[in-house]
Figure 1 (cartoon, rainbow, N blue to C red):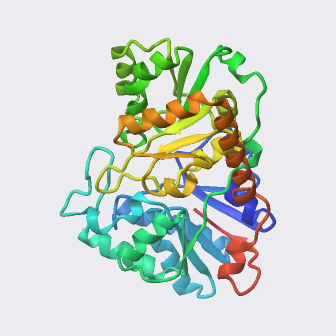
Figure 2: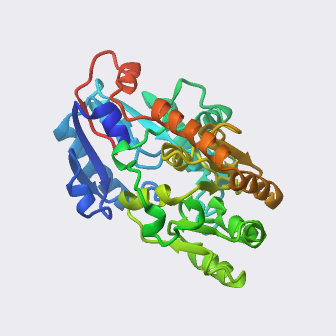
Length: 375
């Protein structure tokens, strides 16, 4: 929604999304939605080809001036095929991080690098590099992601477009601690998928040491994912059920309660070779919008999301000592928390607002295009 509000809200705008996404949220959106089955990890099979035909049919009917692909693997060949028939159409791709690491993720036959990590066969690597070179424009979510492509031979103009905040969801809730039953607590918060890369387990492991200094400390973990059971076991092992709460069923619209309740935000993300890395880290900006100081791993695009020693701290995600040191410093000083929180709020409001901006359109189009169809 942030991208839509900032760039496309006053033009004709349609979206193509995977069929499995449904519910009340999609029905309330202020633009037309088409749903199609996506097969991002299946190249040139019958199902993918059938989906491509379905997408091309939608594009033929809507006749967009610009087609934007949300991910490198979201059937971008459709843009190439559509343009051959409609040469005035321009098409581009948003590049994140994992998918931008191609050369070091080439596998022989099975494209699984691990249980949740996907690689590229030689054929796929060649195909996607060709797509990246032929698209009319590319947008990276950070300079980190942009540099990943440049280092792999994608020598072309790549715009950096940080994800904007959706200001409609930034609503400070008075008495949030009371609502959560944490009135007299110091509250530490993590928001993110429960996967190894997010590294919530590191915080759980140092909680016993933190509680010795701050017995009133409570750690909130918001998110869901494959590491949930392991994190719950870790909480039990350390006997921390009274000090740590995991909320795995929280809608985006309800995140305000948790951001409002916390005193500091921490997510010491790490890089897991070959391609598990953060492209940016919008949660650090969201926390800043609530006036909260942040702590994040010094990896990937997070170094652009946090201004070290100003909006928060960048830490060595493998070092419990470093993480413990920075958390302790913030918890010890209410003045420092307020100062960094104020800096974070100022930056979020100034640099990541969703105020109407035609930068994306004006930068890559000769005229003011009137119709877009991102997917």
